[in-house]
Amino acid sequence: MFSKHRFIIVHYLSRHNRRCSTVVTATTATTTVGSTSLQATTTSPNKTVLLHKPSSRYNTLRYNYRAFSSSPSSSSSSFSSGEITPSPPPPPPSPLPITSFTEDEIMIQEAVRSWSKQVLNPIKVRQMDNESKICPIVLKDLFTQGFMGIEIDPEKYDGGSGLSFTSSCIIIEELARMDPSIAILVDIHNTCIINAIRCWGSKQLKKQFLSKLATTSVSSFCLSESESGSDAFSLKTTAIQSKKSKAEKSKSNDNESYHYIINGTKMWISNAKDASTLLVFANVAPSLGYKGITAFVLDKKNGTITIGIPEKKLGLKASSTCTIHFENVKIPSSQILGEIGFGYKYCIEILNEGRIGIAAQQLGIAKACLYDIALPYMKERKQFNTSISEFQGMEHQYAQIATEIHAVELMTYNACRRKEHGMPFIKEASMVKLYSAQIAEKTASKTIEWLGGIGYTQDVLAEKFYRDCKVGSIYEGTTNIELQTIAKLLRSE
Image (cartoon, rainbow, N blue to C red; front, side, top):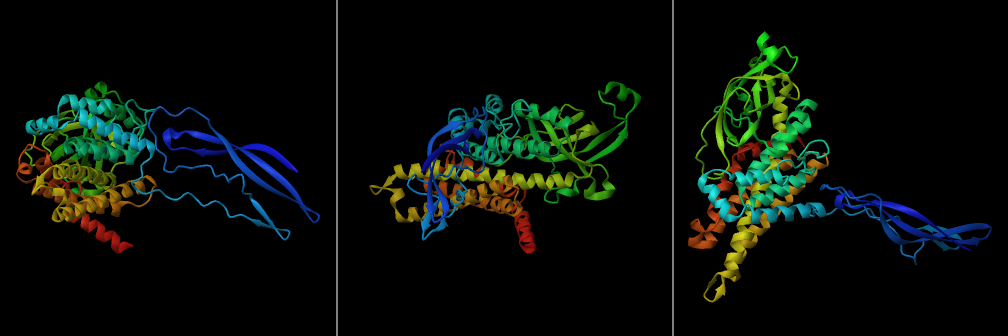
């Protein structure tokens, strides 16, 4: 006896969070063994139905669940000597390779690469490097393209793209393949300032700053000082609580009786010339040492804030790096990020995450040098009637570099996925920050050698990448700090 019925297996597709259902026809066969009636069921899929419209914005899923269905010729039970032998359950989906991006992530990668070639082209990059400033048109377009609010929820705040941390690093990598100065601006803005406000900001702080950061306002991370580099918690900038005067109360829009007065000087602040929003670390109780460090989010127009002239740097020239001086800058307590005295904790977490972004930048530099400059040149350049890419001595060199770049890529996106899954990632972040800086510098140096005389000129971007990558072993944790962090974590395992 045979009977048919229909049921639905729900599964998910990664592209645009589409929830689908597969309609399956099940055929049930009934047979009798002795006095016992037994049933065996076979299934066959008919079609896939979209349950709701895809989201208008890019979203990513960590897994791609697929409906499992057996072939019509197989059955879920077998009969042997009157006994039922269950067939084994379907195997779980195998984990994808670390560098296997979702369809959305691939689309993002291709879109950024296309934008970089069209808008952020080599001529524009060279011009900005020579002028030591970012072109206003390029800066405006970064907001238009959604690169300045990558992880901000667009349903809550204007300008947000609603993407993942991995998507942030993909964007940073692709931008760095054309201009690391633009990549570092986008990196600091998203992974340091925006994510800090998303994680620890009050509702009022998020409402006040997130939409602005996604649409018009560049930001800076104000931590380093003249005597506070790797020893970040020895900072001298203070934020002393003070009672408001009657005149100040009447002018203010809040009902607070106290505010904080910030005094001090920050150095080596990236994006300083272009930024209008500042994340500032200052000590509200110097007697408590690092436990008094508190984070404030403020507008550059707020009070007497002086931006120094941009530093004349070896590389990343288009990215402004300046001294910022705070003199009696009054900040309401509503602009404190998170809790008072927790600034040192926030700083550590921000930098741990930011190091992955720096690795993505260094990865982009290394890929640009090898795949966009060196290999195309070596394939075309002939000596002794042979492409120099075919000489064994050259093959061994660029094969070695390609292997090391691939290792950096695996380490970078492994750290990304670990962070997204809530897994420990500090050791991995320090490792890839350390290694990516070494490989980017090695690749850029070798590229200049492989290009010969032209590599030493400004006719190609190889010499710029060489200058730009050097800071990778300095900012957001020096080489020695990364090694120390890795060693401590290894001892604790």
